[in-house]
Image 1: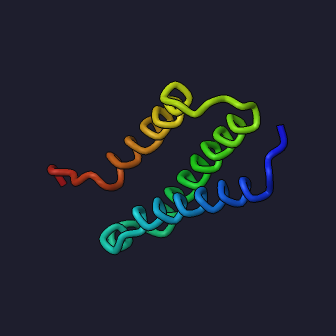
Image 2: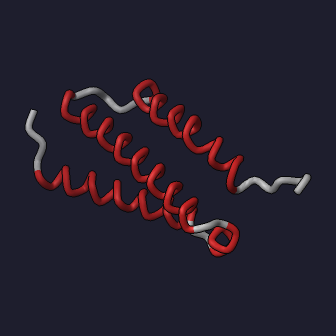
Length: 98
């Protein structure tokens, strides 16, 4: 099954748009004041790596003709929860005792 160049361009445009939204979420003024550069770099790297693998998985679904439905999107959502909830708890959640 051949994929047209226009379809690939649309996919990567959406992929980088989502990357931009997540990076803007991570890089807030308040978060920048509290975090050191290395922590921010780690968060951006993890986010970009996760988005790359999600995009690759969706691209493979498209190549094999697998329909995109809740059953195929569940691994993406579950992996996002597994990756980002601990990061959120560690870096963004206010710690009441400190």
